[in-house]
Image (cartoon, rainbow, N blue to C red; front, top):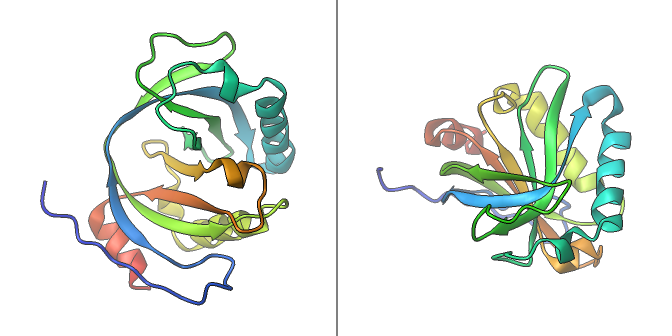
Length: 180
């Protein structure tokens, strides 16, 4: 693979989307979590229900072979009216999957990484996704996956926390998007 160029753009730390864009390669990883189908017309209710389940089922404590304490929210299988959302953790392997959870191996991929300030209403995350889907609808197709990385502080809604958002795509497409 050719050398990956790093592109960054910075704005004021007061911005909700800190606008720190960077194209980065993420290597394949195993992932275990809870999953739900999200319908666009009921997205807020579907997403809230999955996060409530994540907390109620104590997902962090049930996954034994975690490789990191940062939760990942993975979005896959995009369709015109729905997609799959999985909340869980990267793991060493998928040999021990707790009941009611799913396991996946996510492939190597190029991503555009955004750093977004976190808050209890997640308005900054919603705004980022609204902006991206309006400008680049081709990012949301069934062959790609996107994910967010949530530190323990972000999961606790610490006012100083951030969420890292990874949007997949080819290097050319991501480079083009950064120049807009």
